[in-house]
Image (cartoon, rainbow, N blue to C red; front, side):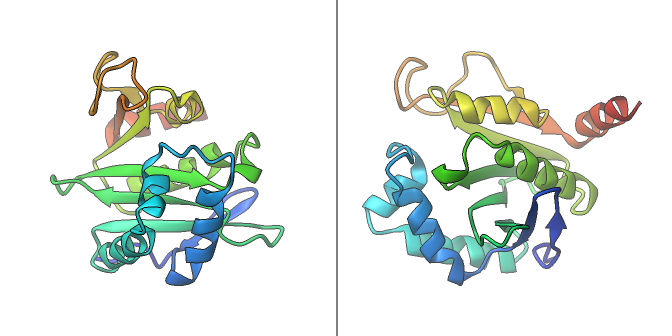
Length: 188
C-alpha cells in the first residue's frame, strides 16, 4: 500500500513525495552551521551514511512502510525540509519526524507542514497512533510536537541517556481517536 503519491497542500507549502534528487537539499540543510550537530541526521552525514539512509527510507516508502514528504514552498523554493512517517513494529503505529533548513526556522513552517502530515496520516492513511521523539534540550521540537497535539508519554521518560544529558530523548504520542476528538473540539 503506497501512500506517498499524494501531494498535500498547506497555506505556504506543498508536501510532495521525497525523491533521491532531494539529497543535495538534505545535505545543505543538515550541513548548515546552525543545524544541531548532535541530531541523528547530522550524525549520519558525519559518518558518510546520509545517502544510504535516504535510499533506505525511500525504499521503505515504496514498500508502504514509510511516507516521506519533501517540503516545497509555494514561492518556488524546493526541499527546504522533510516530514516523514515511518511504520513502527506495530502496523497501526507510526513514527513522525521532521527537519527544516535552519534558514526557514522561526516561521511556523514545521508546525504547518507537520500538522498537514499528521492530518494525512490519520485521515488518508488511517494510522491509529503517531509517536515522535525529541532531544530533551530541543525545546523548539518539543513545542512543535505539543502544538501538533502529541502528548508526552511520561514526563520523565527517555529513550536514550539521562534526562539532563544531551542524549536524553523525550517521547510523545497521539492516537487517531484523540486527534480526531481534539480536531472536532477545535472546529466548534
